[in-house]
Length: 330
Image (tube, rainbow, N blue to C red; front, side, top):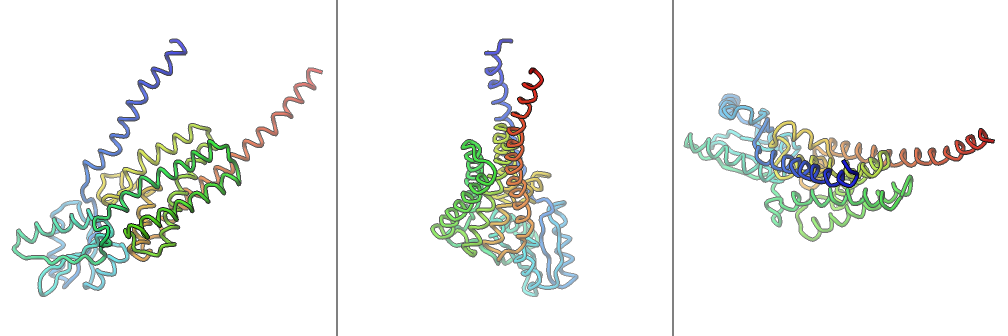
């Protein structure tokens, strides 16, 4: 095989493989969206709550049931992001509490599931959205749409640092500065302009910046350790797994296993969960996503510094070897 034919064959083979992988990564979760152990609360008198729980268990494997003494306890659980909603049995009839801010698709599914159950039994169910999305973005479209731009911004930051030849502290400083700027701009658009976020502006900007930093540091860190191929590897990890597995348009428990779990360990999924928590739930359940993003950022920045150190040592060692060779010849 000639050397000229090899690049052509590589392109012809690799491009369809990448296209197939991308189609699988995006289409498979979308085509298998359904609840899987979705946390749902049940509250009310023990006998009535037990009956409601038995009815929910007819949806085998769909719900992870949490029992609460009363409506107040169920409400606290929803606001603390322990459950996505709750069925409260009251003397006036059953009541469904939802939180569209935790995922409009999940809230809609719960309404449909409970509505079907109530129509079969002839008992109407009153629905209350206890943590709604902002009126300017009732379907949560802005938060869902923010996942891809933030991922692209992080990839661009990591690639730019690599292409410009920035190393060590200069590379780390550039990544921190770019991420902070992206976080401020994104918060300015999503919160100040579109009104789609409802939390503290600076906390939202920090969350958006940390999400960008986690991606950018990972891309730059891989490039620093293994060369230009690291940029492509980091971008592929974020775009082909992190983005479709993030659960941004639904919830991690609505994705086929293990996609939902994998997505929460990657920056796009952790960033989405963190942004929901700080924007709509006063920071509830934010610790896990923060630690995940911080872990990616720390490892990535550490790899950038390590790669710079290894490169410097290699450069310093080369002249010494050359001098030894000359001495041997002499």
